[in-house]
Image (tube, rainbow, N blue to C red; front, top):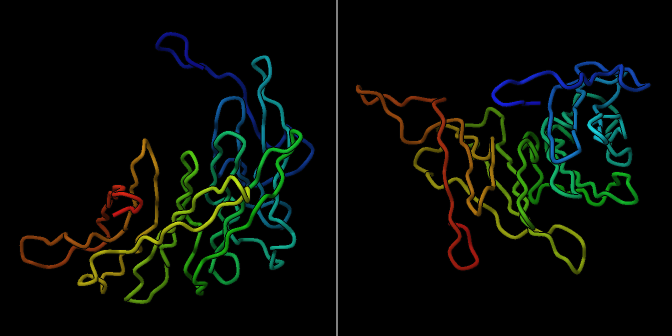
Length: 239
């Protein structure tokens, strides 16, 4: 916590804070208000989990562990459930990009009777080995943006991002728009569009780890510099 300009340790959270034994606890962290999510990438040789801590009267206490939904498991750990996750209000979104040979999926949990409960699982609209749907996620208001960079070796591995919108009538997220890499003349650079995604203040940003424009002074292409593309909403579509 900060007092004036000085930060001081408030509390240590680790695997000793509750009964389970975790490894690589703290691989990913998200916080909103009085709730902290902490990822553990390796739990007792089993698929990964996300631990929930709640704060009351200034003290953080363990509340719940969120595991890979068993009906969605392929039976092996290392599928990167919890490699990316976020919390906003009564919604937690957790990416699972290596599920099903890297096709990926995204799990949405809602807070029901003070317990985080699986509400929906999103699968890639066009399932493909190595697409890694869910390697990045961003949530703002009723919009959910999911990256699918396809981190494979194919030279035409462009990547995509998918925008979902929450439907109040069905209580589900529904596909609203697919966002594509716009520079097909540079497809041989395998841009991996969608490696990171961000929705913030009504704006949309999508990262490609390879820059389609960067050339050095000799005219040679510079790979792996990265670029960020901003999209804006025109009428009902992001362009």
